[in-house]
Amino acid sequence: MSSPRLASSLLVSFAALAAPRLPAAPPDPATFSIAAADPSTGEVGVAVASRFFAVGTVVPWARAGVGAVATQASANTSFGPNGLDLMARGATAEEALKVLLRGDEGRDRRQVGLVSASGDSATFSGPGCNSWAGGRRGPNYAVQGNILTGEPVVVAMENAFLASAGRPLAERLLLALAAGDAAGGDSRGKQSAALLVCRAKGGYNGFTDRAVDVRVDDHADPFGELSRLVAMGVVNDLWNRGWTAFMEKRFAEARTWQEQATARAETQPAMLPEVVYDLAVIRLAAGDRPGALVAARRALKLNPKLAAQAASDPDLEAIRSELP
Image (tube, rainbow, N blue to C red; front, side, top):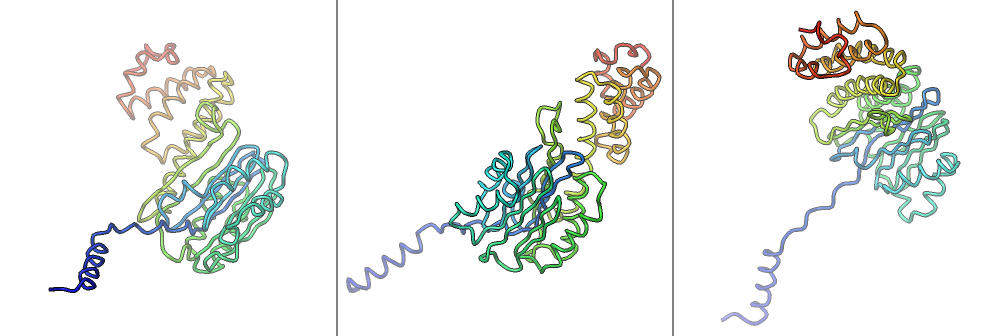
């Protein structure tokens, strides 16, 4: 017969075996990012990459006319909206950073970068961030990262951003992110990436400010996939600008944007037929009937299924009888 002590010990052992194992807490979004602004175009944005699932749901925050925030490491996601609110009320990026940190007991494990729409910037890496951790900043940008292979990651990002002046902000952010990855990136590997650019009336039909908003939540090659999506996102942004101007009856401007969208869409076969279709609509509205007919015929050839739409589309009524 077993003793009471042995019986009690066995019960404890069985209970331990039967008890459900709680999953480990998700890792902190250790990552590298760039928050940036282009005052000449009114664009602000963030690009980020990490060995972390869906990093785009945590790190990037931006608001047209206000600025951009990247919050990471042991991320305090309230830094995003609160930092933007502070800058919207007139605080500089540095002033906003001081307020955010002052009210945060976990500040030593935070990392954050802020850039205002006018271009002033700030970056912070708490002493409790896992190494290598640090950042760099200058007019119009703040670069930061933690659990990196080393400081060359943020240096490469800074250099790539500065060297790409004059290009669309989405492309500059992507180039900076790719440079950081090429320099070593997150020391744990790759999983997700995201890029966000905001501009006044930048969204579909001008109702939101999200000009480019793409995310790769989990992928073996997140940079390759992000590059593919950003290329499509830039086409979509130009397309949105053209269509918004068309809806507001600014037809000459609409045509300029849609011609640019079409030129870029030549390398995006999944988007090209519909971009060309809307080019036909916009050319017709701008008074270019021959050009509209050329575009409409091409769109229907690229995607014959568009014929059903063209058959009843009032925007193409003036040339419908000449379409196949």
